[in-house]
Length: 93
Image (cartoon, rainbow, N blue to C red; front, side, top):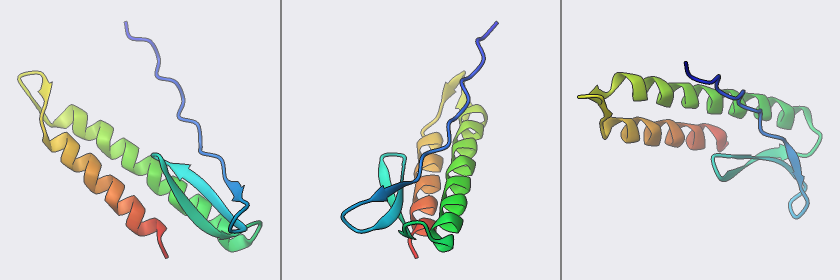
């Protein structure tokens, strides 16, 4: 029996003091969301974190689907790369 997967914790939005912008770190990259404590920054946070969660699910599904003789294929890396690129492009205004 496998142990349960730990819950994926939502990334924390924080103030980037040098720019005065709200920011969040996703997958090792900083995404700037707009002026700190603004409605636009809150909306951007909800959007980019939702996209980030979806891309994670896409990669997990790819790991299950793209298997040959019980081993994941290189297509999984391509799917993960495309999902990350889609998040980066969607997060930049």
